[in-house]
Image 1 (tube, rainbow, N blue to C red):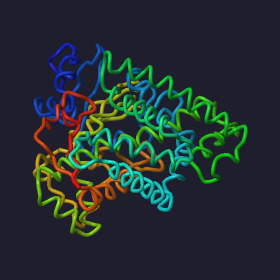
Image 2 (tube, rainbow, N blue to C red):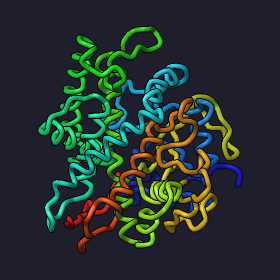
Image 3 (cartoon, rainbow, N blue to C red):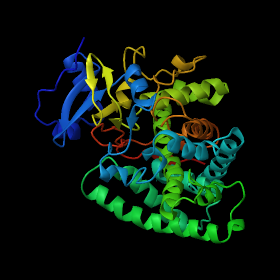
Length: 413
């Protein structure tokens, strides 16, 4: 249809808080369009979903992220001055720093660190004790990514840092006490990261030459100057925090294995390609980021209307991953849909669309896949556990989502 329909509600903020991940797709379905105008926090916004919308969002520098995310979420996630807030050549230069850390050899180093930390952590489980898998996975990932990144970490600091990074992830999509607590913890974590940057700048050789910590501390931007100390610390956290966030996918993968024993058999005895397909379907099916915001940079025609510079837009990531125009039986968990198939860049968008190098697509997506492929194998072949009765409901109004219990498991022998 031509033209963009408008939501009848004067302001849809209450609906967003109650509908969560389904907010945009609910409106698109109601108005028979992949784009709907509404208001959030009294601010006009254009909501969209689908492969074409993802291409509009992520290709051609049409959108800027600056000013598109509420401060309460921005400060916990990317924060001011980070790579996601840059555009054009400045963004591409900073992004190259991140992508240089995502080589196959470097990725395998992180995956190996995760496997070692996983075995060490699960080796401490006592037969019959119950643990919350989300908490365990976050502890494993925090220790592993710090070891890989060259970040010094003793046991006490590891536990504290895990709690801090976990709070940032868990509080980013909330308002009120959960967000406020995360903001306080974020300030403490950032002071610690700035001290690390200062130390490495004073004595570069104390950090491994190939370590991400050294890369961030000594990176020079377009004008040849070192990044401001705070920005270098922010970018370091933008490596550590998203890695810990993979813990949610590990829990969702474990939930999929629990709900369908056929999937456990597929992962245990399947080929690497079959495990990779299981991981892609986990990322497509389960909720991660609900949507991403952008501001239009230059006039662009979309669905028969012109989006003027400054137009606030939201792209529905969750809804695009379940768009029936793109996926057969989108509400069914079917890893075989990816057997022998590479998903198109703007169709599978749990961590954004477009190109990893030139655009704003998450630099750590390949790492996410590799870590998940290894950990689901470990879950099926080296981790003895049972899943007792518990509340495994996923509340899609809670952002970011998780099983209500965090997935409690009882350790086996």
